Structure formats: C-alpha cells, structure tokens
Image (tube, rainbow, N blue to C red; front, side):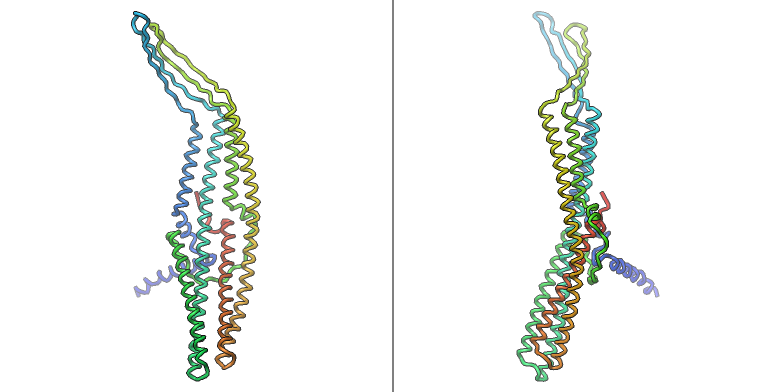
Length: 409
C-alpha cells in the first residue's frame, strides 16, 4: 500500500508535466526554462555590463567635468643686502556649470541609459531568434528521420512479402534484389537523417546550455491567429533602439549647444606678501569666450541628430515591410501545409493500393516501389511543411512579444 501511495505523486507530477507540455504552443521548451537559459547566456551578460556602463555614464554626466583645483606657491626674495623675504599664497578654484548645462547633461545621461536598456532587450530578442532557428532546424531533421524510419518499416514488410512470394514461386530473383536495394537505400537515408538530427540537437545544447528540447510528436499546425503589423512594430526592439538613438542624438545636440561657451571658473586666494605683515585675500573669475571649435561641435551634433531621425524613419519603413511579409509567410506556410498533407494522404492511399494489388498478384514490384517512393517523398514534404508552418507562427509570436518575452532589465 505504501508503494502505491508513493507512486501517486510521481504519476501526478508526470501527468502535470505532460499536460503543461501539451498546452505549450507546439513542441517548444517551457517558458521558464528558456528564460533561465537565455539569462545565463554570455551575450546577455555583455548587454548587462553595457547597462551598468550606462548607469555609470549617467552619474558621470550628473557630476559634470568640473573639479576643485588647489594651487599654492612659495617664493623667497632677496633685495641687495636685505634679509630674504618670503611670499606665499594658496588658491582654490572650480568651474561652475549653469543650470541649463546641468539639465542638458542629465537629459543625455537618461537617454543613454534608456538606450542601454533597449540594447539589453535587443540582445534578448536576438538570442531568442537564434534559439528558435536552431530548434526549428532540429525539428526539421527529427521529422525527416521519423519519415525515413517509417519508410524503412514499410519497405521491410515489402521485402518480407517478396520473400514469401519467392518461396511460393511467384516472384523472380530480380524482384528480391529490387526490394532489398530499396530497403538498403531507405536505411541509409534514415541513418543520415538520424545523424543530422543528433548533430543539431548537440549544437543546440552546446550554445544554450541547460535547454532540453521537447520530444513530443509534432501536432498539426494551428490556424494563424489575429496579429497585425502594428503589434509587431510595437514590440520591435530594433525600432525602439532607433528611437532611443535619435533621442540620444537630440540630447547630445542640446548639450553641445549649451557648451558653446565654456564654464566660468571662480576661485579664492589667500597669502602673504613680501612686506612685513602684508596679507593677501582675493577672488578670481574667468569667463571663457566661445570659439569656432565649440560652434563646429554644436553644428556637427545637430546634423547627427537629424541623421539619426532619418535612420529611424528608414528603419520603420523597412520593419513595416518585413512585418507584413512575416505575417503573409505565416498564412502561406499554413495553407501550404494543408495542401502538402492532403497530397501525402492521397499518395499514401495510392501506394497502399499498389502494395495490396501486388500481394494479390496484380502489377509489378517496380510499380509498388515507385509508388512507395513518391508517397514517401510527399510525406517528407508534408512533414517539413508542418515544421515550417509552426516555425512561421512562432516567428510572428516572437516578434510580437508573445513568446519568450524578456522580463527585465
């Protein structure tokens, strides 16, 4: 009884895991596992360091370039036979930034930090795309191997049927050679497909350590769901990065415009003069005048801001076109799978009819093998079309932010 009670939690956990896997959109790894794997990626670690650099850069701009400067001097003078006289002074000075400059610098620091945050999300999306494409490649190889495995089983039964007919004297030795050759060819294709699937699975595991591909059978693709171009653009990290690039360029242009004139330097000095009891107390103020160097820098920054805005507009147009193509590809992939699947079913029925006719003494083995080869080719095309239909749907969901979306930074 205790053994049965101990088995219940195990069976329940297995049932829940199976249900969670089936509820997932196709044979994809669980969301939590993918997020954990992506978060541990070196590429994302690099993006996180860029984010830290953005935070430090913002603090640097808030502090400003001006620092306290301490100056001192000591001199000893002798006039003829008089006693040497000492002279010294100490000064403290610092450049003072105007509130307008401080505000412009803060705006630039905030814009650069926001751009670094977008860069982190962009790195996440790129990793997600790479993971998805490697997973799709593995699925294609796996489905190909499954089709060839089924073909080997069918040709194995066909070769056994030819052997039975030979024992009855109804089949020629040439037919046995044809059946064995077709079986050997299918076995070679099966082994090759298995090797490729294993290699792709290993590559997936090496790049994304800790990821465990789902070994469930590939279900029929789902019909395209309602998503439009605006949904893909809204979730595009590339477009958001272009917007932030333009914002950084505008903030830099604003700061360069404020920097046309350098910061004034205010200082105070105390010291002792050469005369006995002479003391010196004073303040100093220097007002730098703007020049051609700073004017040219402001003009260059303004031009770069306009260039960044133009790049943003160009990217938006390109992404709109790509989003439309991606949505259209999803529809075409689903419709193509439906046609390929129907053709595969019809050719499979034709091949089965040829095989039954041969067993009844009708037709030739060459016709049976030809029908079986055509049916297998079509079944392979239908299997790959199913994977492509799933992949097209996953790509749309990924670009719309509905698949493996980042939770940070």
